[in-house]
Length: 334
Picture 1: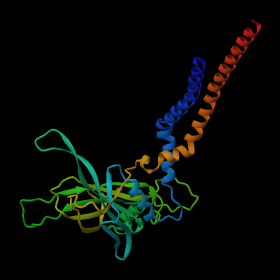
Picture 2 (picture 1 turned 180 degrees about the horizontal axis):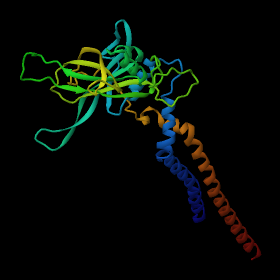
Picture 3 (picture 1 turned 180 degrees about the vertical axis):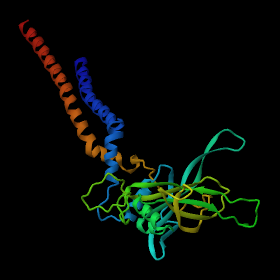
Picture 4 (picture 1 turned 60 degrees about the horizontal axis):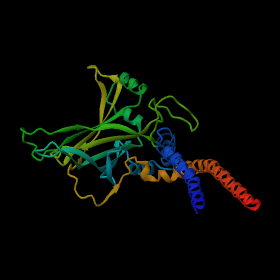
């Protein structure tokens, strides 16, 4: 009875040890900064955010909105709150979409040092199909300055906000202003732009360049001031940092000005979509990782360690059988 129990215990550990080692190796691979949280995760991100050549800019923007243009907002309104193709003298300058999103902000409670998480509004200004030469041509400048503008990098686009007060005649109240934080969605090249690079180059399909590729422009405005007036004046400006006027300031021109309702109050969120906040674990990363890497790595570990432990178990059984045979022979001799 004792020998039989001992045999089962050894067999149990001979099976358990390979399984445990395979699990530990798989866990290390997943949590490793170099592999599971590094190279492999970057590979999955590239695969998830790679589009076919036929994919439109709008389709790419839609997927990036769901993925998360930043890690802040967790909800966003699927349809833009404002959408317009901006023109000047009949010439297209760019297309603008403005989205409303919700993020969590840490604020201090009144009469307390404790902080709580509250919902706040964030507006996303997405500019694409930019016609940079038309923007260059919109600058009011003499012939010499026009040449400098055309020879410089393509203009930068900036956005500023100014609240529209209900009582415009109240001189004691000054309208607040805000500068929108400008960046770009670097993974989405602006396919509809007239140029391909910041130097104003037009590239063929197989051309390479050391200059920055033009991507979709992104502006982010967090409405953390709840006293901000609901109606807002939005001013979009182009400037060329390399070219200065007589006073030493970068030349600039206003491309468009319009009014937009930018209510800082969160309001009803029933029609908002969830954002992944750039968290790949919420987009099936583990399933992809197991399918592409972990299963065969764990299988190799399982087979290798299983071969070793079961070999020891086989040796143990052989020794046990040999001992039984010896005892049987001794009994026969007696």
